[in-house]
Structure formats: structure tokens, C-alpha cells
Length: 398
Image (cartoon, rainbow, N blue to C red):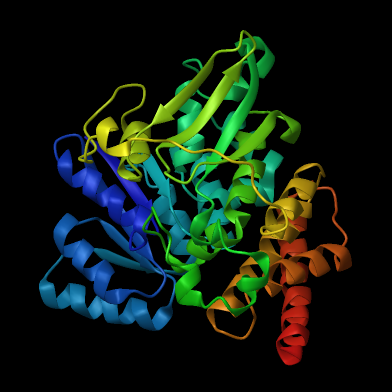
């Protein structure tokens, strides 16, 4: 039986991971679960899955969870904070780590898992976006396995030859011409740019196909999510950004494609359900049931494709520009985006100002060579401070 640590177990990816684990109780066991401050849901998960450890980032929440676990008589040790996350990501009884903490907060425990030689199931795209070469070097140096969980990157992985990752041989050696990275276009794909000024957080979070957390839902609405995925794909598959074409596909049935030099295009298809890539990565190189509803081609009837509109989605343009750069530029982009999205969700910033905050921050903060994790984290912190200043200025104008 394989032990699994689920970093971010109360989010959508974490919940789906536990669902897959529950379907295969003789193959997998959740040995550690973590959350930020959602005590109620983490306690429910502890009762259902009986892990060895539970981690809360918030001290008050950890105390509440400890009381509930003691009252229930569960033999679960409650840990706190970043040290607790790093501990459960490197447990000897843990073979796989689901990295599903949203945002920059997931970088350090995910990197710890890589350095411990674990199979890292990467749903936290920010880890690669921020640390890029440092993260990939850790995977190689410590003999870790890195398997993508984002539906698009998992689809690309499935459409490539049977390698641990594209980095094992390179695109040319595999006969690959380019990667076609698909995206739904989110809830505002057909909305005029002028109408986006008055968008509310609830509207931005109403994704037509996927059930996700609020931050990633806003990223989908701005298509920054696709921009971050482009940067992540460059690192995962050792490919320059000009070899990645973004394709808007509203139905979210084809999750991404790989085009080969002979003109063949391989596409991975499936229902828009995160349990598919989760089950694939957990069982790889084998296959196992994910519990999802089977794809019915007669219900689908049609598949549509269109190019992304940079006028409607300026965040995607900014991410493309950053993908061409080296060093900490991507960490600066990600930090500014996290601050801007948080302000939008708090209703102190307009939807259309998210891209303005990011662009202004990229202009004001100088990127450095990403030679160390300290440099990455320092530029991340600087970018957040500058982004907050731009949020305050734009919020005051609005």
C-alpha cells in the first residue's frame, strides 16, 4: 500500500484526490492531510481517512482541530505551519505527495518533497513558475518523479512517448513539432472587453465547465491561468514558449494536444473531471479507475476551437512576454497576480485592473538571475509590496 500526503486536502484537487484514494483502499492510504484554516472540512477528512498527521497553517485553527481530534479519540498528530508542511512532505511512509496548495505558499513543501525523492503529483503550478530551473534541478538531483496534475499538462504528458517527462529526451528527439495547450476561455470568452469593467467576483468564479477554488477561477476568467500553464509547460517538457500554441476550446473535452513532425496530432480527451489526471498520475505507468462519468460522443456533438483574444485577456499577453525571459520575472508576475486577484475578490479592485497591477509591477520590479531560492523569495516579496501599492492607487481612483 502506498502512502500519500495531500498538501491542500480541503481544496478541489485535494478533495478529488481523497475520492480517488477512497476508491482504491487496498492500494493507497492518506498518511497526511493539510489545510490553511478550514477546520471543519479537515476534521471531516481526518475522521474519514484516519491519517497519521494533519497540518494547519493557522495557529488558532490548529488548536481547534487538535481539540476536535482529541474529543473524537483519533490517533492523529496535529502539526503547525510551514515546518509542519515540510515534515509531512518528506515522511518515510509517504511515497507520493499531491502538491495542491494554491499559489506561492505551495512552493516550499513541494520543493521539500522533490528533495526527499518523492513522486510529486504537481497541481501547484506556481512552484515551477516561481523556481523553474531550481525545482527541475532538485527533481533530477534527488531522483524524484514529477508528474503533472493540471488537466492540460497531464494531457500533454499522455500524448508524449512513454518517458518520465519530456526532459528525458527533448522535443526534437521525440519527433514533436509543437504543443497545443487548450483552455476553455473561462466565463468571459464571448464578453466584450468594455463589459468586463463591471464584472463581480461571483461572476468571475462561475466557470462554465470546472469546479475550482475562487483564486484559480479568477485566473481562468483572466486567462492568467493559461499563461502560468504556458510557463509551467516550458519547464515540464523542456520546450521554448514559441513551441507552445494556446488554443481556446470551450467544451473542455480535449485537454491538450501534441503535434508531431509528420503532421500527426495526438489529443487526450475526457470529461472535465480532475479525478482523471489524478488517477493517471497516481497509478502511472499503470492505469486505474477514476470513478468519472464516461465520455459520450453523441452528447458532445461538436468541438469548437478559436485563438485567444489578447484584447480581452491582457494577462495572457503578459505571461507570454515573461515566458521569454529568464530569472525571477515569472515569480514577479505570479506575486503581482496573487495580490491583484485577492484585491479583486475582496472587492477593492476592478476586474480589468488585475492586468494593470501586474503590468505595472513587472515594470517597477527588476528581475534577477534565479540562482538561489532566497533570490526568488526576495523578488516575490518585493513584487507583492509593489503590487499592493498599485492596488491601493487603482482602488482609490475607482
